[in-house]
Amino acid sequence: MQVTREDLNACTVKLTIVCDPDEVKAGFDKAYKQMAKQVKLPGFRPGHAPRAMLEKVVQKNELYDQAADNIVRVTFKAAIAEQGLEPDPTTRPSVELNVLDQDENKAEFSAKVPLPPKVSLGDYNNLPVVRQPLDVSESEIDQQIDAFRKRQQTREVVTDRGVEEGDVAVVNIKVDGEEGEGRNFMIIAGQTFAQLDATLAAMHVEEMKSLDLEFPANFQEKDWAGKTLHAKVTVNSLSTVKLPSLDDDFAKSLQAENIDQLRTRMREALGQAKLQMTTEMLHEQLLDKLHERSDVNVSDNMWEALAARRLQETAEEQRKNNKTLEQYSAENGMTVDQLIEAWKEKAKLHVERALLIREVFSAEQMQLTNDELNKELYAMAAEYGIGPEEMLNLLRQNEALDELQFRSISRKVGDFLLSKAAVSEEGETPAAKPAKAAAKPKAEKAEKPAAAEKPAKAAAAEKPKPAAKKPKA
Image 1 (cartoon, rainbow, N blue to C red):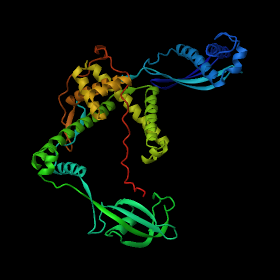
Image 2 (tube, rainbow, N blue to C red):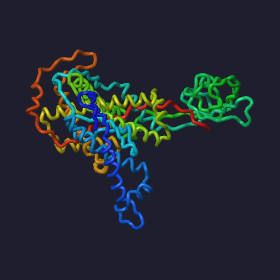
Image 3 (tube, rainbow, N blue to C red):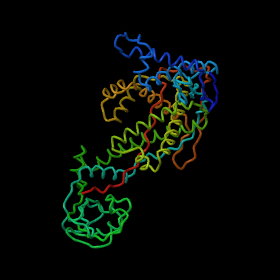
């Protein structure tokens, strides 16, 4: 066996292993014996059929897979010992088979060996962060109330005026030279394309206009897209949205006595939402600042596995929406390769942050209480729109209770860092707090709690809001 070593970084070693012929032969011999136990041949007990007969019935790809597994298991273990490496027990190595030939007894593979992470925790006292204002403005209350009014909106047919922006209209477009009565589209005025929006403005029901229309390249009717065609445009029907009146009756529909009480409740609810959002943003800032002050090294295997899993989840989500990964990437302004690189960067940062969170948790000898775990469980249940018991059962079924524990740890560490941070309001200069006791030396660390070694899943990439789609007739 010949082993070539390449240190990719402080926590990842790549080994290229060329196996000896006798190692390859032993792997194939063992594979035949293993497969013989699964093959039934007339006149022979399982595992006792002659190899010559087995060679005629076993599938070559199954034989090679089993032999590769045998060869890699033995030689990889020997290579690790030869190089004096102690792999990270919580992370699986990745193996790539380069050559496997039974006839010539050749086998070569490369393996990325993950070494334990190396974390040098920086000073987490007085981390500078900026907090956005928590004041709730009157306009924000108005926007929230308008959102509730829109939920109770009704649609009314318009007969006494022309098209206005925001109206819903059924429009017929008849292109010269085409047979039939034209094509119907349901549109929202002001959200089609510039020339058509301008044409429809102030048109009444059954009014018709004849003109040359320059259809955009992304128009939904592919045979018209990117062309200039002479057409007749007719408004077949027109309707508009009517919002409920902003009065006490509307307030009572939202369990408030009157508009003043409704506005008070909205202010309180928005204040709570802003506080939660701002706290989460501050936690993110604190982790960024701590990451800058710290030195974190992890194996490539840790974040590559996370990135691959998240990419697979994204692909599955898009398949449910009848989309390909290529389409999803394009919607986000990227190629698939760029999307993969983006996920790798996010996954690496996520893993490094998770390690920093655990280091602070251990350095401060923190412990989780049942109340903290229950609080996080209720928060997760609210996110998924289900009850706490159902959330707990789902976590158990998916063997994901470690995620509940890690989220609880993250929240506790985030709140702790915030209590020690130098916080300034947006537009102000941070005022440093008196320095508190520095992180305890590693020798004084308490044993880590039985929290999951896996970091929580990487957050989903922010999806762009879809543009208003023009439904086909």
